[in-house]
Figure 1 (cartoon, rainbow over the protein chains, first blue to last red):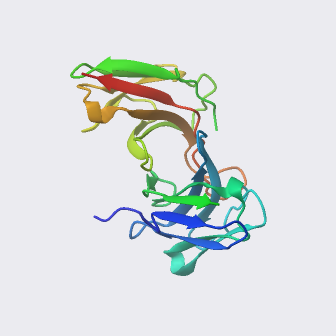
Figure 2 (cartoon, rainbow over the protein chains, first blue to last red):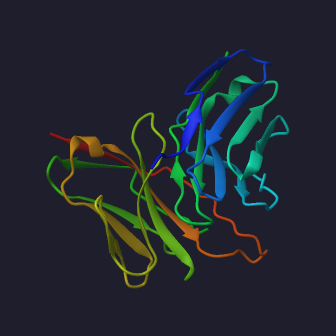
Amino acid sequence: GAGVSQSPSNKVTEKGKDVELRCDPISGHTALYWYRQSLGQGLEFLIYFQGNSAPDKSGLPSDRFSAERTGGSVSTLTIQRTQQEDSAVYLCASSFRRGTQYFGPGTRLLVL
Amino acid sequence: DAKTTQPPSMDCAEGRAANLPCNHSTISGNEYVYWYRQIHSQGPQYIIHGLKNNETNEMASLIITEDRKSSTLILPHATLRDTAVYYCIVRVAGVDPGGTSYGKLTFGQGTILTVHP
C-alpha cells in the first residue's frame, strides 16, 4: 500500500516568511510524528499526535513552530517567521498505535 | 529510553555478510531494540525489531544476547545499495507511567556502513 507522503519535497523561502509542510500518513495509522534533521545532525523529535489525545509538543524548538492534525489524518507543520537555523529536512512518520514507525521521504527546507 | 552505542563506521565487501553491533547495557525489560537505516537524502527505513528472541525478515537478522545488553544486525549478503547510516534504537513498549502512550524514537549518530565492490 501507499507509504507516508510529504509535500513539498523541497522548499526555499526567505528569512521571515511563514512555511507550511504537509504530511499524509499511512491509511489507518493512529499516531503521527514530526522529526527534524539538520545538516550533519541526527534526527530530533518535534511533536507527536496519537488519536484524539492532546499532542506531545515537547520537542518543538520555539513558539514559532506549531502543528495540527485534522480529522486524525493529514498533518501540517507550520513555521512562522523562518530563520536560517530552521533549514533542515523535516521528516514525518506514522504508526498504528505505538507500533513500528514508517517514515516519509522528508521535506528539505532552505531558508535564505 | 536507554542509550545505545554503535561504532561510527564500518566497511564490508559486496556479497559478504555485514555484522553491525550495538550496545544497550541499560536496556529495561520492556524496551524493544529497533533498527533503521537512512540512505543518503532519504527518510529512515525500518529494518527489523525484537524484544528477546532473535528475529529474521527479508531484509536482515537481529541477534540479541541473552542478557539483552547488546545486539547485532546482520545483512547476510551486502550489496552496494546497503551503503547507509544504520541506527540502533531502544524504545519502550506499552504505556508510560504517566498513562499516555508515547513512542518517540531517539536517534543517535548511528553507524555509517560502506559496502565496497
